[in-house]
Amino acid sequence: MFSPVDVVSPHPEPFLTVNARPRGARHVVLDVVGQLDAFTAPLLRACLGTQLSRPGLRELVLDVGGVEFLGAAGVSAIAEAARRCRERGLRLRLRAHGRTSVLRPLELAGALDGLELEAGVAAELRLAGSVAHA
Image 1 (cartoon, rainbow, N blue to C red):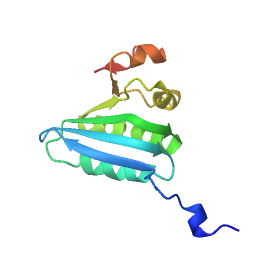
Image 2 (tube, helix red, strand yellow; image 1 turned 180 degrees about the horizontal axis):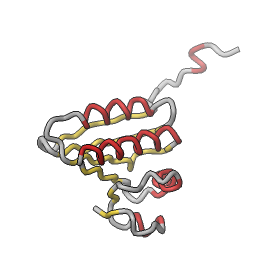
Image 3 (tube, helix red, strand yellow; image 1 turned 45 degrees about the vertical axis):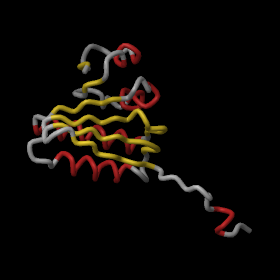
């Protein structure tokens, strides 16, 4: 039988961190690092909701370059944020630092429509011309 000392890591790391970096009143970068799954997606949803309610916001950059795993709940959270941005006339850019393994689930779910991607990613994913480039 295991004791709690055997099960708990001596260096616990968070499953997901989300850091907001405002760039003036109109622009915010959200850095997302870690595992984005059913357990952690509510944190991302809450952070996105907070940022999308900022008065005067015009552009939100979602930096998922530090995401190690993107599950269905994470895809859903990003797709919902894209929908909310479209409804409010806000620009949503997705920055992935060339991590096609993170973008592939979004592509397969059809969640890249309406998102702006960093240059070169669409070519790597062999997407149709429906995705705008930042």
